Length: 494
Image 1 (cartoon, one colour):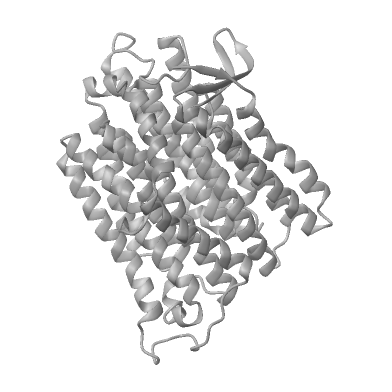
Image 2 (spheres, helix red, strand yellow):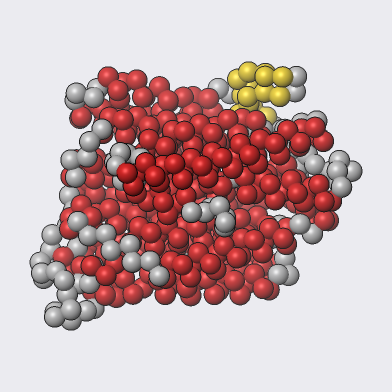
């Protein structure tokens, strides 16, 4: 495989980091401050997108920033899996920035400069994780993301926000320090490297099966951003943050960094062949399956719309982990595709929740009976986002779940097939009643007048765009399917 040395990965990370400076200095001019946010987002996405031809040609892009110890460096590598994640995160940052303008101004939120500054820092950390060439680099940017998102979670600065912020840091920072850091040191001691490899760098001769199994479990639970039970309760607590934070960071960036890190460890540290030979993928698959079903059942009981979306996210994240755990080409393809497909569907749903709050002040589902008559555009977009998360056509979510279903058959894991089908029925059970009651209640049941009054255009345009992309990805999935297919080919050596 051809390797090209280029500083592009570093530039992609630094763009939003450097943008913090003009954002802060433009605090007295909101329009200029938001200009710098959009400019950084467009430049970042352009740099990431410019690497697509090189990666699709089968090459890698690398850049070493500094050597920390002999054989251990802060190093970046762009491959197809990392590029897929970076494209999703950087592209949706632009859309969320537009949404943030409507939301933050519409509610006259305080500390907007701080909000946009830490948003930019969080995106730098996210791209850093996507382009990490080794465990050390990934760990550093993983922790940077945890610290950068804390002020966003606690944005409202009230008692509830501070309490949620403490839980947030305790889970995602505490687990990475207590679990991931020691596991990383043990891994280096046993293997002599932290560098990701397509087929993994661990060997059965490096350690006994029990040691390898223990390391896998420690890594998986250590990356608590993935929301695997029982290390999941930080995510519903973090819903106290403004909706744009929930939308991008807790439907795309933060949570996807968690499952992306697990995917990297499974494929780049242990490797498919080793985990298959030791039958460790099955253990991880059952852990993911438990989270999928339990999160879906809990979501059914939530009246708060954002909390229902939060528990839905916990379950959907474990679809991606399940795709990695099944260790079959189709399941891994489905898991990687779901990073993007779920992102567009779930961010649409969060955008809709925020638009409803801006326009009506309502947070609970029981207060939204008949809201489709007042906000038809928002609720139709909500329907499209729901279809994608459930996994129904004509949305991209159908394709990623289809590959996951094929992956269960390919891996000869029929119990996991029933998990996928059963959880999709549960997804429908907690999403469809919202849409049905929004449009098909009687006049007497409706809590809203029969007149259209949507949220501001800055809130509506992004959710229309992301719902439209969810449909477009059903007919043209190639951007995600092509990169996922190439990543699986490299991982399996096919």
